Length: 307
Length: 327
Image (cartoon, each protein chain N blue to C red):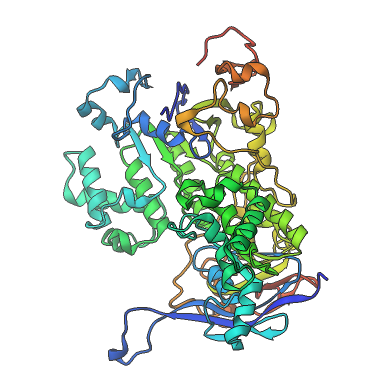
């Protein structure tokens, strides 16, 4: 079963790429693959991840572990995955600080931990540092996870649905925090989400995934104002908008990845499906305006190589 | 028909005791103030949206409307009859008329029951369908109505997707021909495209069967889209109520404004320019005195910590509980 099939994308320096998709789109597997975090029985069977001139897929286990959490960090939907419930959060942050700076003295470590809590907007730092994870709210834990992810000043931050489980007002705070720190540190962001509103807030470019493939990739303005792929268009129509009572659904369901439809995986649900769609898989093609679409409605505009 | 109240909630309060007992210290047992003094009406035929963040009490309020939980104080009436005083056959009749669809499509269906039995059980319970043939016929009719097929009757819940399970839950709720359905986050765990299908189904059914809905959700855009009227709750209190275009279009209460400002919209041009509200929702065990929102409100005044704000009419249909309005 191919969770992800031939996915290509580029994350530019100090910029944010959003990967949007519904269940089974492969967006989380894609994100985990960058850091080779796929667990058995899953396996990355092909492709390269070019990071600062190195192919991460060719690194040894030891080498990739050096990259994780240091040059590339990741935050998840559930902050409990990053926080050990048996240790105070202060100790967990301090451990990381000391890991990245072996010469630092204990007094300085504590000071730095406190200043990181301040940087992520957690008041009453000393008390929080002494707390255990279960004593803290979801929003606070998420902030701590962000602090832990950013304290190594990574080049890339991968965020997998970082605010999905948070209240709307807390989500706004966390997103603003990520924006602010990203700008200060110059980190690039790879943001995985199903929420198009979050994408509009946070991202410079957006890639839409469906059944394991990228079907469209554009700068954020273009995705919303001039969506090209029928799936993108229909997804935007299905999102609730205040004032418009009737939602426009996409008929059918996402395909079973064990048995993807032949040709374009979206064709059974596509209102514009043509004969060729059930026979040939469309390739991701570069358009004149710099966007990419994988759809037979948009034949090769240039013979430029795919990104 | 629209202006007749189907449900009246009057001064409903619900406090839950914490499990730890401090009785030996002869102090009062700490209570979670889930809801405090909430009053509202649900009009026949409408979709009434109920929004708020964690700990606001919206789920508890919904459960109290259906008398799945009893309030600590206050009253609930259904068509003018006090629900809390109902017993025996009268209570059973009420249960037929007020149904619920839960958030979790994976928990609300008995994993060991076939779909035919899940959908047919309430009807059997209420004596609407008795023989096995009647139950099967009813279940089939309902499944088709929600867009499923005959072959699904004999399957088990785990064989279905989240969206399909919610359809089954809707079929089950319809099986007793209710007047009212409480929809508690019915699409929160579903993909956007599946959500749209389920919402459309619910709207079609409402039109066809003249149903009244209370729609609980944390998804503001969704509630703003599907509801006729809505109420915003914060830490156990109702803070704003009115027509949807009033509450979400021209919000008056600072909390509603904060919610709308924080809500990300799929439009890159509409970046947030309003100052983000600080902090998080305080504890429901000892909520702030006076106005509960005051610890986060950018417009807080002296009076806010001393006096609880009462509802002020912004229009005939639009009310907000804030001292700013009462100046």
